[in-house]
Length: 226
Image (cartoon, rainbow, N blue to C red; front, side):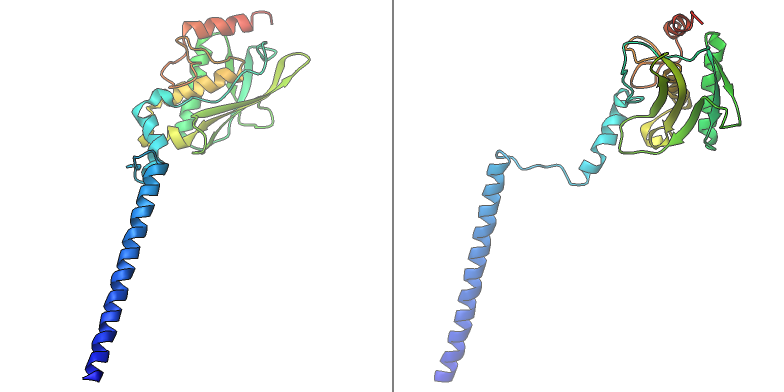
């Protein structure tokens, strides 16, 4: 009997230990739950972790006008320009869609008669380099960098880029026309134009406008005293 009682006592002690462990575990879980409620203002987030990775591009897809064409801001009250209303352009990408977009954008500018882009296959002669890059870390479909002689306020070199991360990805819904508009926008910066909120190819977001009469007049005034 003593042997049996010892076995029963051992089993009871084990069961009691398991019940006590369960009670402590539940209690700790409840404490953590209420602490979490208090820290989040009484409402726990219902957003899955994966949604944080897609929130930004999904917002762009829902409202394409939120995608900036570029992040260029004017650093001067004076507009920079080339000595003449023409410039040699070297296209440094082999992406056939982007090459066509650059050429169509240059053709549109050339047809205005206020500025002439001349394509060259010699990079050393080019005043403007037109390329492509892929960058998901910036919310911009293009970029423009330029070098200016501060004494004469004349442009020396310019480099424009189209961000294939947005423009070549069907997820963002860019039509070929909008890719051309983006190229025309960046080329506009390369010849000295700034952003404007008017109906213009130089609107800072969306790339919904091609070259407008307003753009032609601004370039004409910029280069009228050659």
